[in-house]
Length: 217
View 1: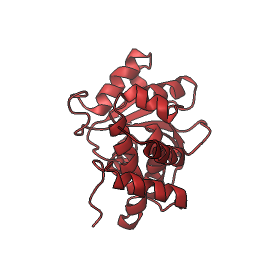
View 2 (view 1 turned 60 degrees about the vertical axis):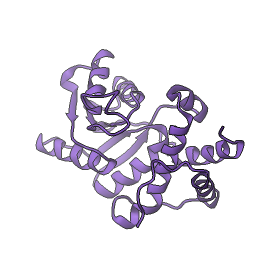
View 3 (view 1 turned 180 degrees about the vertical axis):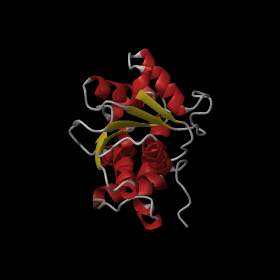
View 4 (view 1 turned 90 degrees about the horizontal axis):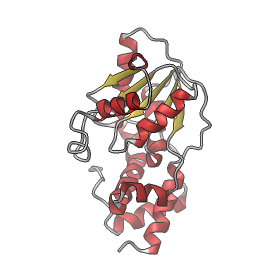
């Protein structure tokens, strides 16, 4: 049973991860691979709204996706986009990235190999990883303008869609931890974390929502 306090703390982390950017036309849309096909759906919707002429789907597999996406996250995203009417010519697939940093670096390299001029990126992620994705892209690809996007969902709706509250809690805590430790490791820009968010993170760790934490030493 997840306590009322833990739900409140999770809401703090969820709200903080939202960047609240207004989608705008960009050179390319990059859909970051994950267990959530909703990222592909949002990317397709933005493409069909004319926000970018080209999509890059990036991602290999992880312990969360190896069973449900055996052909790789980016490939499953591509298949979803084709089902939704995106022409194959508008999709590039980057199939090797296994973390957010590699998502950015490998997508950048793929676009550079094709001599495509990229001045701005609409970066599509899961709702609770908008800030992490943004901070990573700002660090690793500083020359482009980054706009963040995700499915417009509440925490409750997202948990219902995933049907695994503990997994969502663990993922939220893991995303928040990386905002604390990755700037010192050179993986993302540093961002101020309000004290209530830091306190909520600490309580959730103490409650055992820690399966997605990485060693910080």
